[in-house]
Amino acid sequence: MSATPGDALSAVIRSEYPRILATLIRVTGDVDLAEDALQDAVVRALQAWPRDGLPDSAKAWLTTTARHCAIDRLRREAVRTGKEAAAMSLLDADEPEPPETVVRDDLLRLVFICCHPSLAPQTQVALSLRTLAGLTTPEVARALLVPEATMAKRLTRAKQKIAHAQIPYRVPSDDELPDRLPAVVATVYLIFNEGYASAGAEPIRVGLVVEAIRLGRLLRSLMPDEASVAGLLALMLLQDSRREARVAADGALVVLAEQDRTQWDREQIDEGVVLVGSALARSPGRPDPYVVQAAIAACHALATRYEDTDWGAVVSWYDVLLTVTDTPVVRLNRAAALAELVGPAASLAEVDQIVGLEQYPWWHAARGELLLRLGRFDDASDAADRASALGLSEPHLARLRRRVADRA
Amino acid sequence: MPTYAALIYTPDVDWSQADQAAMMAEYGAFGEAASAVIRGGAALYPTATATTVRVQGGKGGDPIITDGPYAETKEALTGFYLLECDDLDAAVALAQQIPAAWDGAVEVRPIIPMD
Image 1 (cartoon, helix red, strand yellow):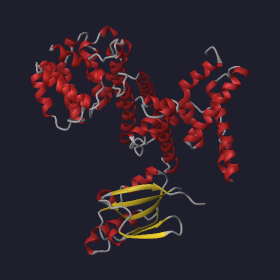
Image 2: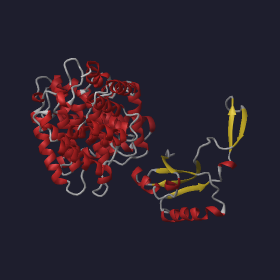
Image 3: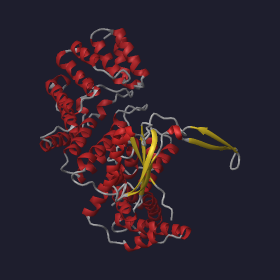
Image 4: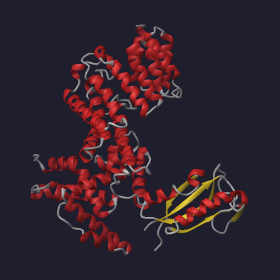
């Protein structure tokens, strides 16, 4: 238990927020009311805990108090609108702390409502950060580089849609799960990528990366048998294991070839590699794209030096990935690995054959890298300019520009 | 149980004409299959028959009557159903059975309960 009531409160909010909220949403049937009531309970805790001492179970205290706050809110509403039934039914529902299996189902329901296909992907991301990760609205806005008022409006609209359109608050059945799970996994990976491949001025937004991994762990604890969930967590752990080595002191991004691999997080790599293994064992039929991407990341993580990378294995995994997700971006990444296996000329030929990436800055950046290696410095410089004009931030281009300038 | 409007957007056809008989039969089949949850609905004459009404300058002001639909779009509002379903998932599952879903689009909107 932490030293002060304030610390104890932050700790329990940090670790238990989605569980408490999920239970409250089940009891109240209303996301907004549950959030408001939990907020009320936090305010009461700030007053009560320093005065009365810490409760035995902070989580139980908050859950019970929030439930009473919800009843208070419904009663006030009832006086205003003459509807009393809702508050009364909540009173009946007063129960001791729910057992772990019930909390697990509550959380799963919350996961699937946040990632419901009727909500836009960006809305799913915002809602997941707000309700599953427990960020405040201003924190979500900052994390996603959106003005606070815009984010508040987006979240309000999402919650109104859930309430008015009656998006069901339930766990999908086993036969629905294959249709519904990809959206959940994609949402968490979108959060990760917002942080890991930041579009903002900072090269990495660590807060988002950490939240995504926390959410990945949450999903894994809720759905331990799903290969794509294990693959997602493995992929995020392996990519993030390079975080320290990925940014130079001046803030420029360091490419894989030049990273100091002693700075890689061995613990995260070990955990990720074990997860890849178990995920591969669980998806024998159709390859899962997250598991395959994690396998590619593992090839990099397990190479002591860049030149020790098993590029044949990397290219083979990309071939597997193409069988399930044949997109121009996957083809681009395969071509980049091919450069290491057979050289820049063959790779550039492949890159130039990919159709549909003219507006994708990384396509131009990849071309720039290959043109540079082929000694075509002016073409490489043009490619870097194109990538920049299409929105790739300068830290991503610094190394390419430096080498073009050095004609090296 | 909530009620949803399933707004039907399709090419701007005339459902009353003989050349739409096959399509109307498909709608008929949907109507029969979903009769337990359909609370209302209508097929609309094409937008060429539409008249759009506005009043300028507030209530009681000058009426402006124009020939044609409110919005000229490639696909037009050509009908609707009212569906009483358990939740949005059920409504969306049902909307997939409406012929417009593959001949245009179906917009599912919850209806505000009036009590």
